[in-house]
Image 1 (tube, rainbow, N blue to C red):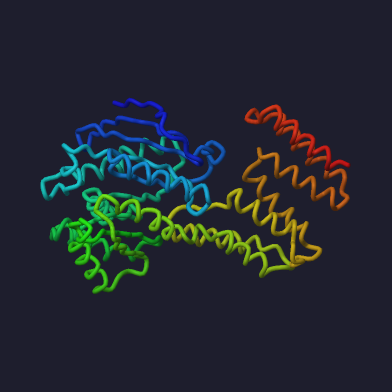
Image 2 (image 1 turned 90 degrees about the horizontal axis):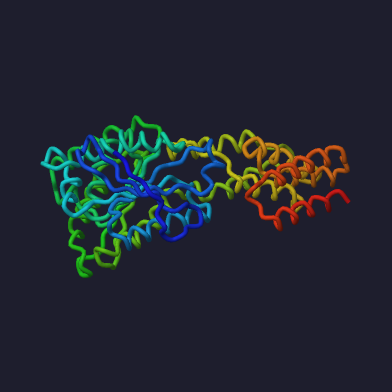
Length: 393
């Protein structure tokens, strides 16, 4: 049984307003209150695979809203990929049960089953989601995040656990599950991410001793090469740790994604006489392997590298610059066939090369797309059409 509505919460730059759901779980035998945030250009990127980020403790509104805004900020500035973001409430009456493993008398394994099977199936029915699943939790839900990652590594790829504890303050069963996780993951191709934090006891975070024990444990053993982890200790209270942890952790997890354009600039400059399409493709493929889901060149890539070739401020590419720019733009229209700006740009290059028939062919395609684009205002449409007519002079 499902009920849904569109929330009228604050506006985000890269994400639509929340879709609020109440979803009954057969595994939990209970209802789960959920928000779903999707990229506001998800229709345009229908062929893209979106990672899924689970924000736990939706009921703790201040940290919850901050975390959503952080994801929006990093996505908008192209430092992390846009994702399907799922907020899950942990009402106080079930919070302990849902974060305690079934073996210890709770329902954490049932909640994992709900996320892995029921919720994931629901999301796949609506969106093109990848197999990358990242958990973000605080305190009890940080403990759950750690347990879920170690219990189901073939489903979860990482956890950001603010004010976590050492396996629920030393629970031997959870430690055994975590040890088995570390023994299992070397057989996986992708990287697993475990970022955890704590405040200090002097500032009121009683989890500090447990996290110190966890940190000492991880530093004392040999860890798999595909296990990426970091520990943050902050001079803040327990309730503030998500606000100083999540942005730093996300930035680090997705740092290779964030610097991808810089890497592509280096690839281009290292090949001034040939167009390095294979090198670009291989770079994105290697990035996809590390993160565990497909990363495709975006408009950010096409616009940035296209401008690198087109303007060629340092004369790096000589007489090749416009031909290389055309190659990038032809790649762009394969992925974004409805974006008139790429056709207009191609027409501009053909005009510079005095290939007037080809100029007109692509400018006419741009005009057709502008006229068909219902998202443009009358003023915008007239402006773009005037710019195209200037290119014919």
